[in-house]
Length: 165
Image 1: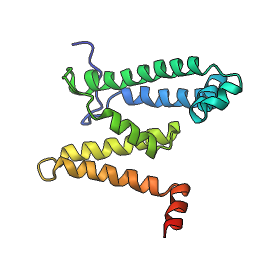
Image 2 (image 1 turned 135 degrees about the horizontal axis):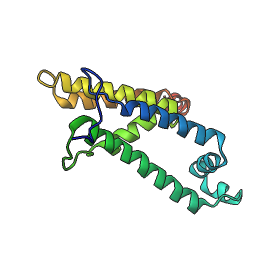
Image 3 (image 1 turned 90 degrees about the horizontal axis):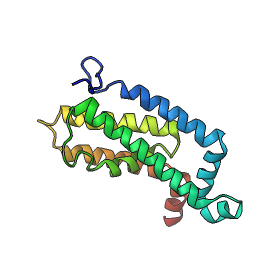
Image 4 (image 1 turned 120 degrees about the vertical axis):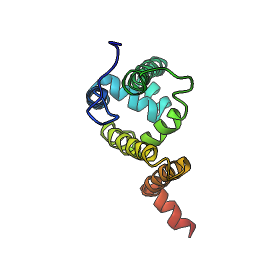
């Protein structure tokens, strides 16, 4: 069993967290310091304007899908080789919802995503720790409350709520 990733003593965390931190730093550098990152952000915000500005939108989409697949593979690597130590069918169910929630709470910024991921991981791990006393659905409700609180703090949402009164 040499393909196992060692865990930190007494914790579900392992050395992949260091790789994740390095990956977040590289993604931040790529998004905000390179032409490719600018093209990706421009395409994500307004594909038609990016194309008008000379960006090959199709190429940017393929590059983004490929890089996203690599990052998702790192997440699966962590789960299979660093946490459970085996593959189980459906191990990634709910990962898409959680990824969207983390992106929303982290406001699509690499540093914010890291902090949001740590917060959601803490909530999920805490839910596993108190599973005998508290139903799992309470953890889902707590995550939903965090998402709604962040969404309500966005200035556009606050303005719309004020207008509706």
